[in-house]
Image (cartoon, rainbow, N blue to C red; front, side, top):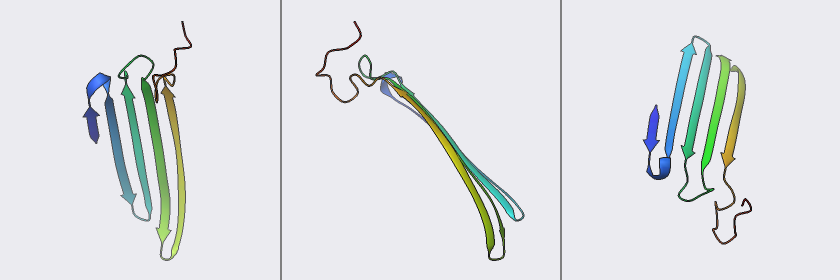
Length: 88
C-alpha cells in the first residue's frame, strides 16, 4: 500500500496484492489519484485497475490479464494558460 499527498489537494493511493494457491496465482494492482489543480481548470482525477491470474504446471501455463483506467481533467489550462477560458 502506498499513499501520497501534496499541494493543491494532490492525493494518491496505490494497492498491490498477490495470492498463490498451488498451481494458481493472481496479482492485482489498483491506484487512484486526484488534484484540485494549481489554478482554475487544471484539476484531475484518475483511476487504474489491473489483474493477472494464471495457472502453471510443469512447462504449461495459462495467463489471463485485464485492466481498465478512467481519467477526467480540466484541459483548458492544463498545459498553457495563454488561451482565454471558453466558459464564461
